[in-house]
Image (cartoon, rainbow, N blue to C red; front, side, top):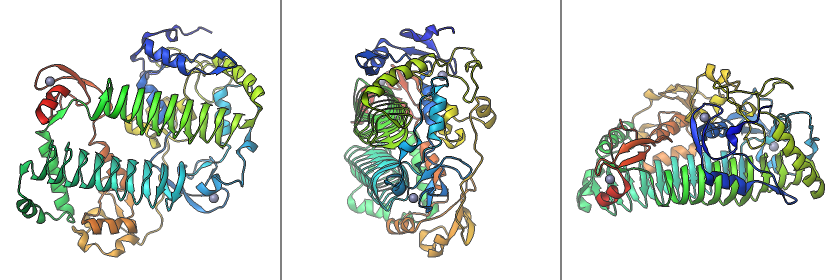
Length: 596
Ligand SMILES: [Zn+2]
Ligand SMILES: [Zn+2]
Ligand SMILES: [Zn+2]
């Protein structure tokens, strides 16, 4: 077997999947060395990655079905439950109560290591046999039967990538929020509707990139503002309308006629915000309080590079959506909450330490390698769906001594096992990319996309790296055509046939489904949702909640950098604003000189 020389040291390399060049720096190598596991005094070096940062992120995302939830039945108590697995899936799953109960034991699914077979194949077979959680939820939950990739919340509905929330609905990236509906990345907020990237705010409607604002609507990039409407780039203002300073009386007069219960009026204001924004000057990146960082949407980060949507991360690289505290972390997709010294993980964190190539290492986990959903576990290798476990391999219990003998043997086995198209039999050629470059060995690689429990199109990978069905199949990945079923309803009404004003919407709407004006996908209005629109005087949505999520997703900049010149000083900047966009973009220095 030819040994790939591209993984020996730092420098420019070609991605083994897409052939794109990417850089491995001496600092990267130092990090891989720092987190390499040490067993009985011997270090088992983690090699530099063979894929470029984007292909690595795509691979991680292909394991996360965040938005396609299906009605199903708990395999233990037989109660109806919402599930992340389609009806056609053969993956067994239990509801939150049963999964966390002592009515079953994940150890009973344990198996011996087979040193004649690829390790990844054995891990997948194990994962597909042990009951999974119907929805990935942790912590104290009250009346939260419909939340996913979330924890420690109350009375909330369809919130994802969310923690510590109360009375929230249809939120993504929600932390410490109360009574927020339809949002993307709202932290420590209350009574927000349809807001994107707003922090520490109260009573906002369709605002974006706002911090510490109060009672505003249709604002963009405002800080410390109160009672403002359709404004951009304001700092510590009150009673402004389209950036014009009014008196309290004038402001009341200008806004009191604007009835946001009318869907038409709401859409007009939304469109007006879009118009105003085109004339606004934007900073080269989103975020604040960063020190020696490169990326976008970074808040309170230090020495963090090539990262997006992170908050409170120190010394991180290739991190996405890592929030409320992480240090020394590389290649993490979600979520943080005090995650340390970890490499290549998805949806992991909460007081966890030294997680390597792990999917779902939750709540006080440490020293996990190649684990696939764990809670309160330490010193485990290749385990799935366990809680309070230690010294387990493939869900089999060992003593510390035997564990420390077996893990090095397993690592050596993985160092010799080439990655190849999953399901290929012994002796078949290793998986090669179209460029013909070698895809590497199991050790030091995240699980290949072929091992995902979900069709590629149903995962978050499809949002950031959209592919056509034929291209997915050409990669030997799976595609899933099954659509979640809607519970029985009295009738389905076209969105366009709804009365314009919430005032004229009867309670009967709760028994109907509304046909999404974009996708045609029917959706229901929940009783607490209708109460929210009525109390807050807001319109009833005409789009399915996932379409609304996509609409907000598209309001944000892509995770891609372009070279552009600062519109003021002409300095070259790296920014997520593509050069053809209409907005004016300044370097940070010029922006701070202008706006503050
Ligand atoms: Zn690549
Ligand atoms: Zn159950
Ligand atoms: Zn400048």
